[in-house]
Image (cartoon, rainbow, N blue to C red; front, side, top):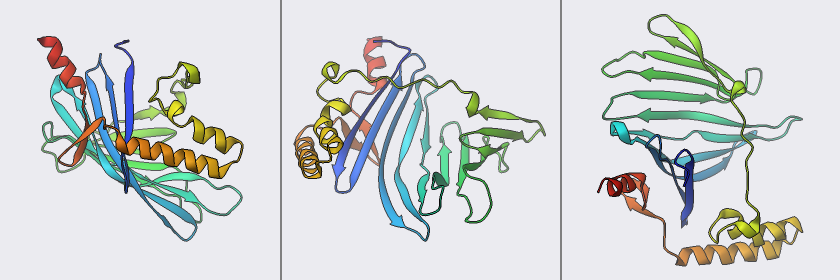
Length: 238
């Protein structure tokens, strides 16, 4: 395998409630990430709110650091001539070993005026009660950093980030458990607008997945992938 690539795997580990678990790793950087998430939806006055429940853990193996993070919520505006989807709510990132932490707020657009996709962040260095760096801007645009030293700088300009087009292998070249292969009957019937057949195909797939072995196991508050990069590195040393 290409050690520069990022490997990603996901599995729906529960159907009631519908909980999904994710795992990603990059061999060269020795970084791995575990996460699980499920949603609760509710209708608001002029939008639908989807609350993302769960948490993730990004591990920097070379430094033995684990950063716990939570997820923002998603809101979809109803009505109007220009509906949109936006992120909203507060997220936290923290590492007990390094003592670095960050509070991130995704601001939803007010009904009248205001901007979409606004984000503000406070980053705290170890043993500091006041933030050492604050960041604001648009999470899908330009974000600016202001440091406690008084220095101001562009933190990131996502508009300048290189866009890599997604590549999907042909269905006949995919393995049995790849997403497009698993959901092919559902997708086909949706395309021809046969909702009953699509529902039946979805039901068969869910029943099959319930009966099969999971790729993740429960460990305290986390769902952890069985074949962690950490295990592979340990095996390689021996």
